[in-house]
Amino acid sequence: MHYKLKRITPLDCVVLLALFLFAGFICYRLFYSLNYRWNWSVIPTYMFRLNENTGKWEPNILLEGLFTTLRLSFWGMVLAILIGFLFGLMRVSTRLFFRLAGRTYIELIRNTPPLVLVFIFYYFITDQILVSFAIDEKILSSPAWLQKFISIFFADPPSLNPFLSGVLTLALFQGAYIAEIVRAGIQSIKQEQWESAWSLGLNKWQVMRLIILPEAIRIMLPPLGNEFINTVKWSSIVSIISIQELTFQGLQVMASTHATIELWITISVIYLLLCLTLSVIVAKIERRLSRFDSFFQTGAAEGN
Image 1 (cartoon, rainbow, N blue to C red):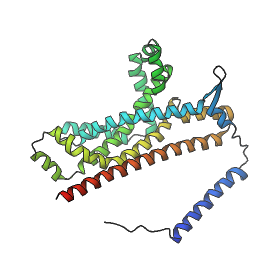
Image 2 (tube, one colour):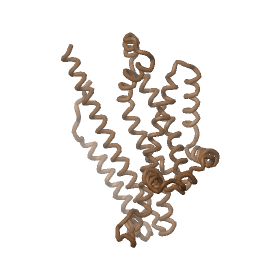
Image 3 (cartoon, rainbow, N blue to C red):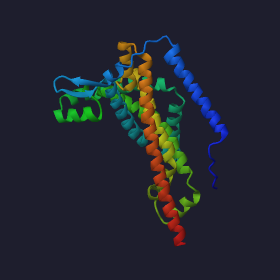
C-alpha cells in the first residue's frame, strides 16, 4: 500500500515554533539566569595537547576517552552479535534443551538492572576469570610491536583487564536483545519458504544458511542498527568500574576544573554526533538492501 507524502502543515509549524521557544527558554536559563561561571576554554585544552618532545599536537584525555568508547562499542557489538546469533538460533531450535537454555539467558539479562549486571560481570569476570589467565603479565612480556597493536585496537596493557571486562559486559548485555531480534527475524519467514527449502533436499544447516538467514537478516538489520547505537550509549555505564571511556574521562576533568555543565554538554554533543553518524550509515545500508530487493523482484517479474 502506498501513502501520499504530505507537505508541512500549519500544525507542524506550531509544533516547531513551540520546540524553538522551549529550546530558547532552556538556553536563556542556562546562559543568563543561572548563576554559573562558564569556562569553555578548558574543553580544547583537554581535547588536544602539545607534545613537547615531538612538537606535535596529540589527543588529550577527552579524545582518548572517545577512542576507548569507540573500541568498547565496536568489540562489544561484534561479540554481542556472535552471542545474539548463537542464542537466537537456540531459541528457534527444535530441541527443548536449547530453547530452554536460550530463554533462560535472555530472561536473566533482560530482567536484571544493567547497573547490577555491570558490577556482577566486572567482579566475576575480572576477579575470577581474567586474573587466572594472567593476561597483563603475558602482554607486558610480549614483543613491542604486539603491545603497540594491542594498545591501538584494544587498550594499554595495564588497562587491558578492565577493558576486556567492559567488552564482555556490554556483549552479554546486548547479546540478549540481539538474540530476540534474531529469533523474531527467523520466525517472520513464511512457512512456505521452509517447505520449499525442504523440498529441494537441503539439510537443516543448508536451509538456515542459504535460504532463511539471508532473508531474515534484511528484516533484522533496522533493529540491529538500533542495538549498535544503544551499545555506544550503554558503553557509558561501564565508567562506574573505572574504564577510561569518554564519560569517565569527562568526570575526571570535571573534578579538576569544576566546569561541570560545559563538560556534560560537550560529552552529550559527542555522543549525539556519534549516534547520528551511525544512524545515517544504517539508513544507507537499508536503502541499498531495498534497492537490491527491488532489482531482484523486478527481474523475477520480468522472467515470469
